[in-house]
Length: 307
Image (cartoon, rainbow, N blue to C red; front, side):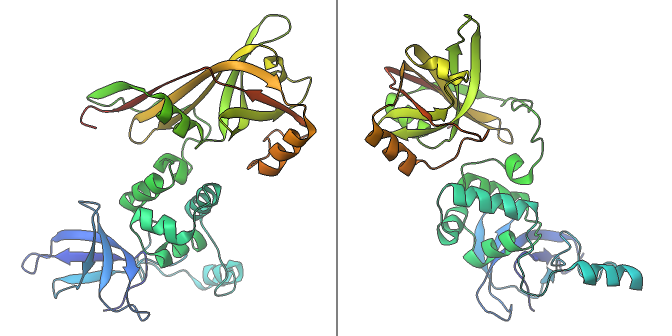
């Protein structure tokens, strides 16, 4: 018995041939693909070390053809030639969309493959396979990766990227609880896009998203002097950041209220530029740094009633 990362281990009834259990192979212990294997079972999401018995077999998944069992179909000669010409040289990374999104989230959080794999309970080799090949991981593996990367399965799969969040079903028994100041500060420090509420020069209210940083308990962002966010300077503003887990129908939000000012001291500006983790998404010349010093922090979280 030999397997590759991403293959399925299927355990069948010896008498009827009915599948009793199956799971995704997320870790190999021998380079030649022989047992034992680390298997994430589809029914429990548990990862266990498995020495397959006589009632088990491997369902091989075609590498580069996600979700297609090996040998299930054969292309004609013209199609085979086209596939051969389109395929990258052996060993060349050729990630699928899920792999690219996993890699982007991992780099955004500054995590190594080893740390991400540990959090998701998969082997680093399997994570490398996901990031470098057009893999088709199970939903259980996607849920574990989403939790490890503080994102959602929906985001990793790229579904609904142009739809507003919150269109999923509500939890059957939700609970809404208030967050303390310390938890609000921790959640603020984990995100890079928030919304600032300001009054424009003509008095009209506006809410605009900005890329932000947390520096010494202050919320700071870059903008242009003639932009809408620049209207925050010299006023008390509200700043909001949130996270919605569409797949699990849960989420949280944090609201910070405080005075906004422009950072003008040259050393302070140089320090902000040096410590900035992200560039403003709109691009262009945005050299004006605005600092919000929260005087009030509040937040709420929606979870199942038993959590």
